[in-house]
Every structure is written in structure tokens, then in C-alpha cells.
Image (cartoon, rainbow, N blue to C red; front, side, top):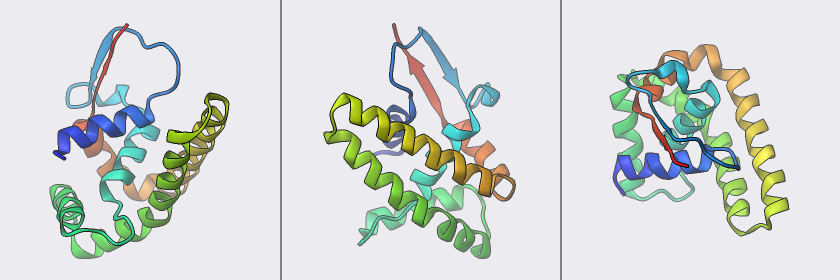
Length: 143
């Protein structure tokens, strides 16, 4: 899957339930319109290595971390920061995909809380990279 395709999938995961308005948010032009929570969740998905990663998984994460121009020490710090959170997000997202609508809403709220708490804990140390991640995000909403 291409980086653009992955970002589109990730954005579908982080958009709230309910009707969408007709507009486009381009993080490269208006990063202030991308919430820190959305940027943090996308950042985690892009930097997370699943259990038993393939060489493609490893290469994708390494390319993303290189794009952020991280030192080796910073890369290791990011990896350790996102692993547990990424694992939990994968579990919740998998549950959402098979849950009833009511259960999915509860799981979505649980995922939002998980992201919010992770962001509170790591916002200062990750801020420059979150701002860069915002520049990669493009959200297109339709009627």
C-alpha cells in the first residue's frame, strides 16, 4: 500500500462518526485545522511496527522516521513511545471493524481516550514531529 493510501485509511479511522460537511483540510497549507489528536494518532500509526513485522513494514516505518530527520536516539525513543499505544490501537480498531454500531461507538470513544491520554503524556517531546505529520494530512469531507 502506498503512503497516500495508508494515510487515507488512517484518516477514515480517525474521523468521527456522523455526517460530514463539504470541505477539504490540507495540512500542508493549514496545519492549524488538523487537531493534535488526529496528528498524534496518524503519527503513531505511521511509526508503529506490528508484531512480527515484514521487511515492508520495517522499511515503511524507517522511511517515515527518516523523513522526520530523527537521530538514531530519537528514533529509538519514538519506537518505544508508540509500540504499546500502537498495539492497543490495533486491537481496538480490529474490534471496531466487527462490532455492532453501539459497541463500535463505545470502542471509538475508548480509542479517542487512549489517543488523548497518549498525547497528554508525550505532546511536548513529540511536538515538532506532530507538526510535520500535520503537513502530510489531507482530509476530504463530502456531503
